Length: 209
Image (cartoon, rainbow, N blue to C red; front, side):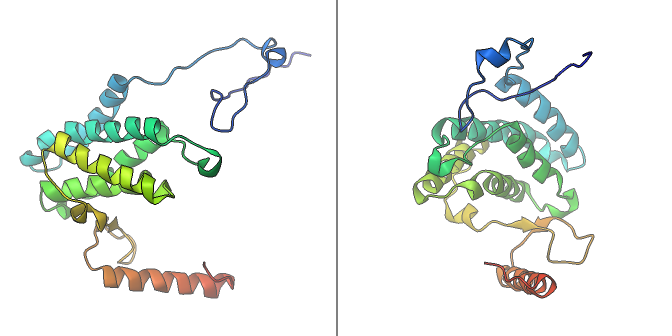
């Protein structure tokens, strides 16, 4: 008595079953459609434009291709890499798009040397959000080809896989608070990560796989 129920659910698919009409008849259904590409571009471009105000003038024009390129990767990966029983985690949503932009916002303008390095930062963030989730060589190859195509069309750069495959940004090479920078000394990075793994094992008495 005098109780109201509020519920939310996503559309059927990706392991989600359709809610039965027998249950739905008790609710008033409100549908929230996905944002259009234009709306997503407007939201993230305003964020990126504000962020780039602290950069030198030559970075002013990179905000739009960054947002458009991220949207391109996001939309295409949703179409091409659908969830299956063996790849049930292949679900990409607006949160992933936001993670790419949020990753870019972590960098300090003083730690970016040129526009090409900013582009490497963007490719790194896309790879951490999208590529790291892929489990087959075929899917990873699809992603690599897609990101290179976006770099060519959106940024007018004819890059190769070798130029982006080993790009890494992080904030774990120095004591906190550490800047988010491009990591070029991979031997040092591997050594630091190994130390982290050993500390984890010692503290929890549980070796990492």
